[in-house]
Amino acid sequence: MKKYIEPIIHILFWGIGYFLILNYTATIGDFRKESGPYWLAIGFGMFMNQIVFYVTAFFLVPKFLRLKKIKALIISLLGGFILINLIESSIDYGYLVNFFSSASESFVVYLIYNSVISFFILLVALSYALIKYWIQNEKLKRVLLEEKLSTEMAFLKSKINPHFLFNVLNSFYAKSLKHNVPELADEIAKLAELMRYMVYETNEDKVALEKEIHHLKNFIQVYQLRIAEEDDVFINFVVKGAVNAVKISPMLLIPFVENAIKHGIDPKTKSIINISIKVEQKKLYFEVTNTMHQRAYGLGDESSGFGLANLKKRLSILYPNTYTLETKEEKGYFISLLILQLDK
Image 1 (cartoon, rainbow, N blue to C red):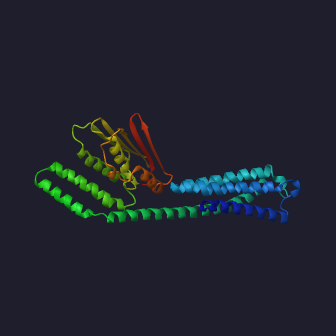
Image 2: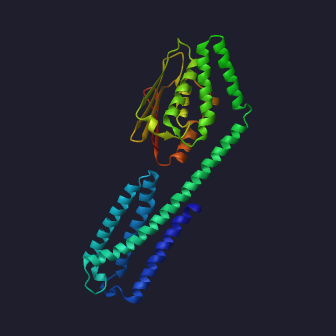
Image 3: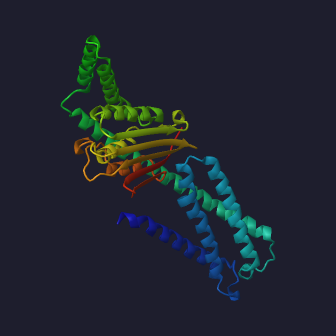
């Protein structure tokens, strides 16, 4: 029922407004009723005002505020305001003049009259859109806060303290160096860095994209410890663009890589995973391609991270209407493509 409340309020508002205007003009005689259905002229004026209101409140303001393009919003509002008033005044002056008062009025008078009314409607539309935008943002903040709290509670319930794990890994690192096993020390250091990022960096709302990329590379390197040298498995990672100039929500890209490893690796046959990250004009293009096998030997279900289904939900909360996510199967490969509008 709640979703119908707003449309009902709009219908009542415009209906009552139209009735009051009809009654007002009938009382003071602003219109020449003998010239025909003068209610048509009033209806046309209200229709133009509705265009101003709904284009402003439901299209221009939400779109440009979401993209944080204030200058473009102001230019669009100004251009639309001028255009709509010129159109309305031209039709009033050229076709509906017979319904107005008998006094001879110039086109400029119609333009000023319509502009004053449109300006008032524009202010109402801006107020409506800004209040609605603020309410939606507050709801999103509450949802994100609830998810963050639930994640923190789940983490607190963990049986193993992460600080304990770090201490253990540091001990292993020191022992491997003491016994002159530098390769093992390097592998332990990468695992510790991987855990440190997951525990501490993810507390931030946004992290530098290059940090997220470094985490992905560490994750891949740690996983590759499980792959034997004779296995025909290739993981390629390509990065292009100014990744150091933008930020992203943490742990947003890892589900794609986890999914590719889980379903795209079979040591008995040739397995290829291609990961491509490109930043261009504040947009992230992230593509992961992996071979498809009937039986996979990658990560188990317990290690599937957020999962692609939950990722879509998270994207809709963190980046509403500013992302594109596509997945498809093509010639024995599974392809995931994420296009994301990023902040500086």
